[in-house]
Amino acid sequence: MVFVDTGAWIALSDKSDVHHLDAVAIYTRLKQRRERFLTTDYVIDETVTRLRYDAGHPIAVQFLELLEQSESAGSLRIARLDAALFKDAVVIFRQYDSVVLSFTDCASFAACRLHNVHEAFAFDQHFTMQGITLSTK
Image (cartoon, rainbow, N blue to C red):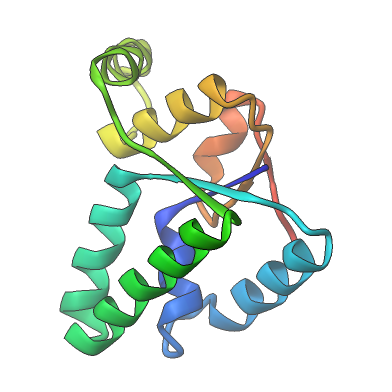
């Protein structure tokens, strides 16, 4: 299973994103490996918001439809932050006072730990701090 972060979702969805071509190549390779994907509701929130503001409402809606299809097909699992996952994210957040991390990053790390995920489709180098390898082209 591979965790998908906000930057990867945006790059896949927005053809004007600087990482779009890399994201398509990485996604294609991961699909060829028949990987299943994991993301969180916090990542989805960030992604939909950024797509809405930067690429427009239709692209944000298209992204949500893709998520619904992928989850129904069993290729995507959405980790929804419950009290336990939230608490784990808080613990991680408190550990990094000298590193600029969003709370969403910490929730992502907590979800990766919970689901034993060691690879992330992301353009955010912070995942490597947690021992999570980034997917490459």
